[in-house]
Length: 279
Image (cartoon, rainbow, N blue to C red; front, side, top):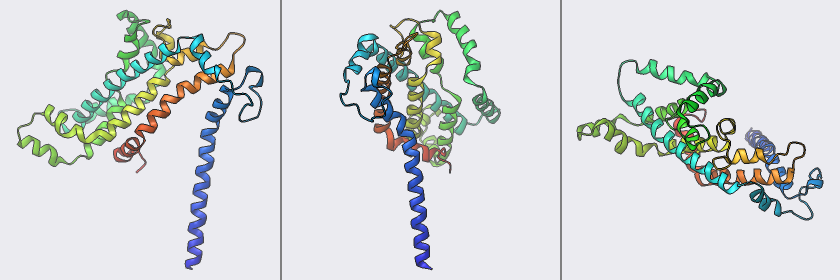
């Protein structure tokens, strides 16, 4: 009986690892193909060889020569940093209010705000476009920063869930010490929400970094363009240099890989502690 149980556990573990290997392979294959294609010439892009005989490292230099990719990357970093900072601050502030403060209509207001998650983003593009045009922010950095600066329904929900898990004794002790609501939020509770803040910061950064539709509508000049716009502008009308396009894609991917490598532990811990991990 024990031997059968051991074999059953071994087979189950082998099946789990096999499934993980298959999933990892499906996820990594497009990335590996992009890296391989970025080192080929335009005539050998369809070759099945995983690595070219003569790697064309010049494709990466050419990406910076054909378009102001360095400036576009800097623009994207600035936009992502500003939006991420705004999201972290305002979502944590709103999450604290919905989780710890008592006021009339709190639950109804939160449910109404949460219901905006069901509205497709494309539905809000036209109203936001009209607002940006009315403010005179078309083709300016403000159009990239302000719309996403003041929080989101998902970020507020994430922070509310995390604030709700903190023990009430922390807040009660702070009230006895004479702390105001702002001091309780800023000095007592917020330091305990670092895992959730890291999750929100990473997800927001990735969203802004990969955003294409909004920059395409708002930005025309390369001076304010994002890296995703630069990637599209490398595509020719009749002919596209695919190795060059793949090299640019790999350049855009590297900062995201570095971000996740640095924040991996805090990100996973925040997902588990915030209740988004399926528990």
